[in-house]
Image 1 (tube, one colour):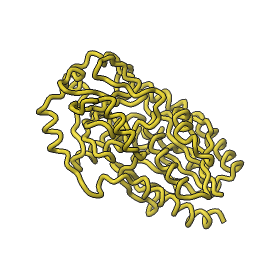
Image 2 (image 1 turned 90 degrees about the horizontal axis):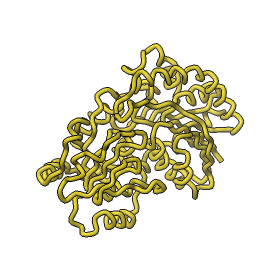
Image 3 (image 1 turned 90 degrees about the vertical axis):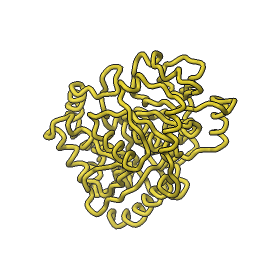
Image 4 (image 1 turned 60 degrees about the horizontal axis):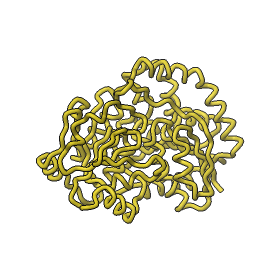
Length: 369
């Protein structure tokens, strides 16, 4: 039995949701693998998502700090981010030593991280192979927000990845030299019966234009109730559970509902910040996207550039969104521009999982001998 330590970023639910997609595939494909999930923020979500998997165990550990946002805003609070990051650096050496002990004690054969940095350092010192999988690293995400000299520990850790699987929209440097592979979008699978159930719930007459409005579970934007978008004619809305809008045409995803990809699949159109997780679930389900544009965040800009280059989204600023009303002209224009067929939008969870297992089977023994 091979043991994988799977580290998941603590920022939001996107990293956790996409990790669930891969872990489900890995366990289905390979019976001789067990996974230890290392995470804290969305641990309840992860436990519920994988509760039927007896080869998964969970370990509570803070993996990174992510972004710090301004109050009632989708923009980063640079001053507070720097304060939190400096506190994080003070624990850096302790984190690495802690993980060395953990990896040794649990006889971990392989480390996967999406995309916490310090596990790579710990794995490297033990000769344990590691894989980074992400559309970004925190080193590049923080450039322009945190001074470059302070980012050196992150850079040095990412350079110690044995392999790097670069996801759609990534503009990362070639961290692992020739051991980098490029992949597209992937997401959790959907059940068509559940999608139909949700569609009938939010649009029982079958005559409405269904909009998924998701700002992310770590964004707390006040006064959403006053947005004119809710008065858009012939529209009904699905919102994440943290969006507090009380309207007859607004349906909130229940807080205890785990498989939110079904709500995206049930929608005609998705409005979101450019978080890779929700974007990927929209793309894999062939949903047109309207993306909130955050100029200050490099990760967002890379994702937006990729989506625009492939005609997969339109963008809107927060000020523009505050005035938006969806009308028939808007819908017609949107649908005429979003026409994609073939393999480009295929969910690559299966392909990526096979590649992970290939690495584990063919490289692990050689490295650990």
